[in-house]
Image (cartoon, rainbow, N blue to C red; front, top):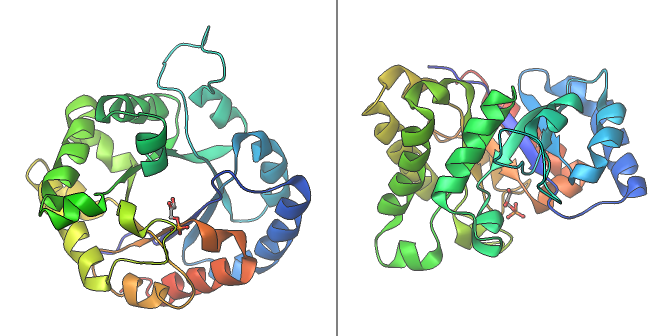
Length: 257
Ligand code: 13P
């Protein structure tokens, strides 16, 4: 089955108006070369409006890094409602990024709630999950992935995965320069698909599975060659136009295969 190839840049807490403008000038200029894949950027929320304007008219899509799990607006100081992200042109929103889980205490249940709320607001959730180094070393990678995935399926229902993206991001590979090997990435992705297939084989076969964790211009092609790796969620390398575009080129080269 051929699935959408997708490369999403997660800028994390980086950027400035000037830096964003310089980066986006290059991305917008080059974007039409990558028409066989989908490119998206997730800037910090305060920049969504400006970034949205700069990519307007280009094929680059906008995403947010997080949203509030609450379905109703109101007294949640500091939080951002999914409807607000939608109003500012977001298509995607990351949920459950490992930094949100580990630094800000997001539980599987809260991540699942964010997933549900994102869809209620018309956004496509990008569910991030992945094991820590300790999990991998003690052999519990699959148990951790299953727990994180099952929490969302239990709350949202398997049909909700039809309009979602999953990003496998092993915590030990994020920002460390230590990327998963293509075989490790493939094994985790195949496991996630098998797990989903226990509920619905068709949805399991159609949901895009992205790999994230120290993807760069050099290693992207070998990761994207794996049959169950449909693209990437890119941190550090998404802040440099040349690196991000090289990763997009690697995804495009695999398109339809
Ligand atoms: P790096 O590409 O910097 O390792 O970050 C990956 C990531 O966390 C993307 O969400």
